Length: 274
Image (cartoon, rainbow, N blue to C red; front, side, top):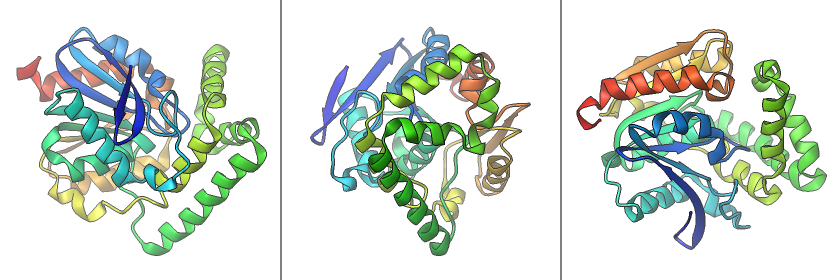
């Protein structure tokens, strides 16, 4: 369904009933990337998947400021109020994980549990942020100048997604088709507004998180293994769950195991509401 919030139309899919789970996808994805997981969990939980601004069936405005982490967090808060959700589990992957952490810091009262898959609290220094912002803007311009197909060819070849080449050909083609259907303006502005370079650092605030945080990471994704280990040292109620022989997009590479682990985590942390 389409839900209008703050003058932006968001596509939201709701499955099942029970304690609400809010799913936030990664860059170039949309709510459909969670289908295997939400289909597994919908018998016990209300699964709410959102097409983030600039992605899928949600709007792709030309104003880059509408893509900032603060602006999109406000949109999500408004969405939750519209859906009469007062507390939820947030599950975010990569860009969606960074957004989930940002939202959780701004609106902690909504968060019972935070589950982050292959995500980070941002870059620590201004120098790192400036360099990454420059890189993000160059890639954003490349999308508009060279077109979506050229960008997807490039994006599929980066080392971060090398383990996805082991997936069945049909799954790889489905992922590629989903990426090709995205809005060039939406992806470009997402990089500029929600890219790692644009995100404020939340490293110093990790110690103040009052709710449990579960960090899921693929053991072959060494960069994010290191990030998760460092995050885990600062989060008071933090837990790291590694996935053997998996890369960055665990929920895509092994959806059945990912869904089963998520279910176990949920029953452990919110069992009184199930």
